[in-house]
Image (cartoon, rainbow, N blue to C red):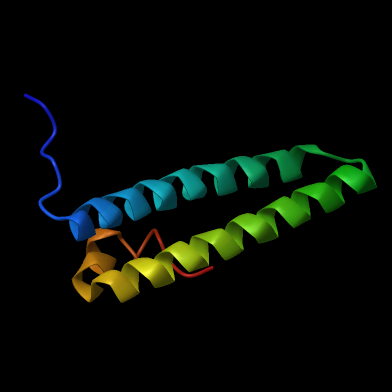
Amino acid sequence: MGKKSARTPEDARLNQLRSELNETQLDLALAYRQFDMVVDPELVESCIYQINALKARYNYLIRVIKEQRPAAAAAARTEGAAKWI
């Protein structure tokens, strides 16, 4: 069967935020892997910049999810694996 559609525009927005949060987690993991593999100082600097940008985006998404609906914070797994970084 197909996916359930969101009941309200707010639910749709929360689903979108959760999806962006998951994508940002994956991007952050990739950025850390790249950082571990580079040796050139300019590439190291680039990786650090990318990691910091992704961490800022991640923290922003967590904050917006919590503001949208406090109960959604638990649904977005903001405790445990997904935490403020």
